[in-house]
Each structure stands twice: as structure tokens, then as C-alpha cells.
Length: 142
Length: 142
DNA sequence: CCTTTGTCCTGTAGTCGCTACAGACATTAC
DNA sequence: GTAATGTCTGTAGCGACTACAGGACAAAGG
Image (cartoon, rainbow over all chains, first blue to last red; front, side, top):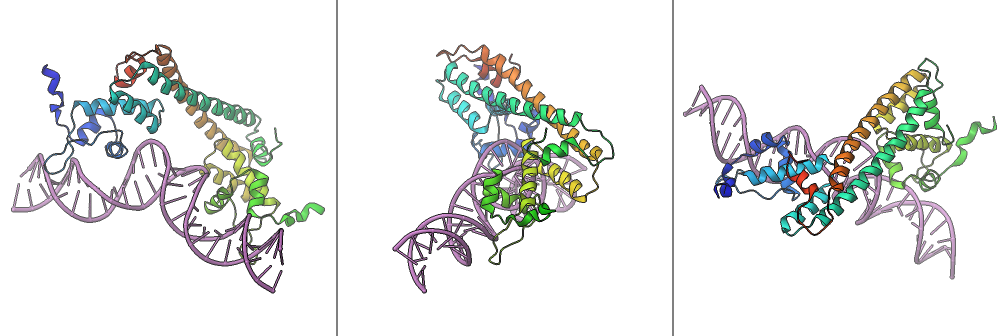
């Protein structure tokens, strides 16, 4: 019951930025694109945040760190906000994103193999002949 | 000697797009940002391309496929255009990019581990309890 | 030869996820 | 009281494209 009025924190935007490590402008951006709710304002129009906003921003930032798109985060938040989400629904979003991440890793690994293989044949000397340039210049190169 | 005038091809932008697989608008974009040279024009102002342009666009596209940034590609092209490049110079650009690619792979693999580990604990059932949501909601979560 | 249709031209706006700045008001420190 | 911050708004910029509007031309059919 004592933590029922946990929103009493009354933080400024800079406080929220400092506490979460989020960039000051990014907070306003997240509000603008609907990831953060419109906060209450002081009489002069300054944003006032509470503990709920700190939590919400933390959620968004952790989701971003895991590479979720803003679209996906909006989806996750609307599930949670609805109050009747299920693990199955959340897992579905997560699995989709995991597939995207794995696809990106595969693409980058293919690039890495090509690049590493090509560069390993570079002489590193003053000749203009270069396996990397050959690869870039010719579709049929090694 | 017969292939000395290979630039006689006289291709339209759509031909160049079709031959290389590049998007039509992207060709104009590459010209605008200096990756492709300003091509000669027909009397009515239409772009006319030759074999050199096909090669150049191929170079740019292969470099993009390997994830080189436009900045890096501009660098590589200016080395080649200068005519006095060395393998060492090209290799340096390539090695730098390889490091960037490897760093991206590491970042994505860290994401993948977290995501896969969390999702593997999901029940996939109708309960609102969800390990993925726990991870996103709480900085101190598993 | 003339009309239609297709292609090309230019410039501009949209995408994603921020980041940064300008200029106006509010608060705080001294 | 005043000077120095802090916050407000809107807007522009990044990279690497992609797409569209509105106009001018070119190729093809009748």
C-alpha cells in the first residue's frame, strides 16, 4: 500500500535520462513515436516523470539493445498494456526476432568468410595487384 | 585492339539496371553521391552508359554486398582511379572493414544467446508469466 | 503523320532510429 | 536583479536507398 503512490518521484526529463542512461532527445523521440506515454506536465509545460516512466523506458531500452524494432516493441508494449497478454503471444514475437537476428548473423558470416579469405591472399606490398580488388572488380573472381 | 572502343555499348539507364540487377533509381543515387561518374548524355538529356559504367556499377554493387560503406567505397574507387594504388592500401581498407563485420557478428551473437536462452524457457502457454517479458521488464532479470 | 504509350528526366519526400541544433520560455544560482 | 543554465518546440541531418509527381521526350501502332 505504501508503494501505491510510487509515481510521486516527480522527475525531470534530464533526471530520467541520467537514471536510465538514455539520451535526452531520445526520450522525447520515444514519446513522439508512441513508445513512451505523454507524461503529465508542470504548470509551465515541463514534463514530469515517475517510477512508471523509468520502468517503461528501461523496457524500451532493453528491447532496443536486443535489436527489436520499434514496431515490434510497440507490439510487445500493447500486449503488456492490454493486461491480458500470454507467454505464447510474447514468445511468438521473440521467436520471429530471433530468426531475424540469426539471418543477419548468417549474412555477416558469409561476408566475413569472403573477406577474410580474400584478404589473406593480399601481399600487403607495393604492387597494384590485389586479390580484394580482383574480387570487387570481377564477378567471376575467386 | 578491337576491344579498345568497348565503350560503344550506348546503354540506357534501364539497360544498365537490367544488366547489373541494380535498382533504376539507385543508379541515379550513386551518381548523385559520387560513386558513379556523370555519364554522357544524348542530345535530349538522356544518360548514355558504356561498358566502363557496367564495370564500375558492378564494383560498387559487389562492395555493397560485402557491406562496405559508401565512404569506404569512395575511398577504394579513388585509390583505383588514381591509378597508383597498392595492395597494401587496399588491404588496409579491407582489414578495417573486416574488423567492423566481426564486431557486428559478435554483437549479434550476444543478442542471439540472450534471446535464445530466454525464449527456451518460455512455456508457450496462456499464462501471462513470460521469461522474455521478465528479461525486458527488469534489468536484474535472468 | 499523328497519337498513344512507355520511358526518361528532375526534384522531393519517405523509410528507421535516432541526434543535434535554433530560438523561445522557465528555473536556478549568485 | 541578473546571468547562467535547463527545458520547450519544431525542424534538419545522418546512411543507403526507394518511390512518387509532374513534365519532356522516344518508340510503336494505326
